[in-house]
Image 1: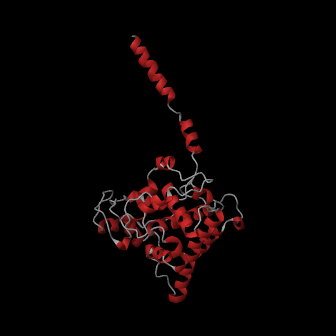
Image 2: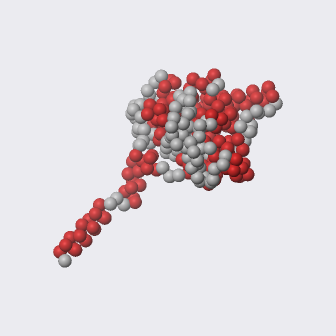
Image 3: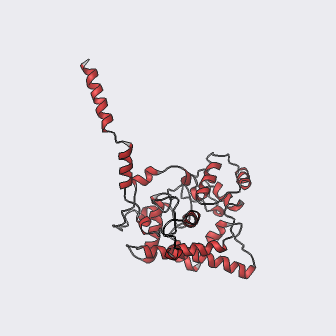
Length: 299
């Protein structure tokens, strides 16, 4: 009898020590945000993965590390980040405008990944973005593009566009000339083969964000940056990582969060063409045409 009471008291005591939902939320809200997030412009932008710019903090570290290495500084401010990210869209706009002047058409219209490769390797951006892979470059491009589109769909303060930063204006200029078929056959085929790691855009990785922040915005140390960069090397090769196969739902939902409407027919054909079943993991891929980079935690 005494043992039963003791067990009961012990059980109640154990449950009493468990944190409540309110306490869990409080602890989570107290976790410092990433340094990149604290330096990235918020006016005119509604980021799909807040409070990180990328899907998880590893991606934020990689982008921040690239900016630091290029500028040759340890501490970056919001103006630096705004300028560096704006330059991507300024170059993208210039490339599309040049295409139209020279060919009266956009040769990249149906091949978004070729466009991403081209602008990343351009003289204006090569110095900055060879520190990260084409995969991660494409990710940050689409995430920032989506963040600006989200604001236009549902504006919030400040409503005066003149108060928005250089990056926001650069994205608007790009959107005015953007005729690329982001959800078409070429890009969908790349996604089916693992491009953008779309499962990371749909599956919950809150634990990763909770347990691995890259700083509180006050300490601009670089302790974690090099490790992440090694995972996602400059050449974008698999490096022995195993491939994974996203499902139809992963691709559709992941692209929806980036404001990309996927061509459903092209998606079905892509799964059939590459001989993989929906949701089944294929053998590792090393196809340079699709820039396979393995399953690194960078989105």
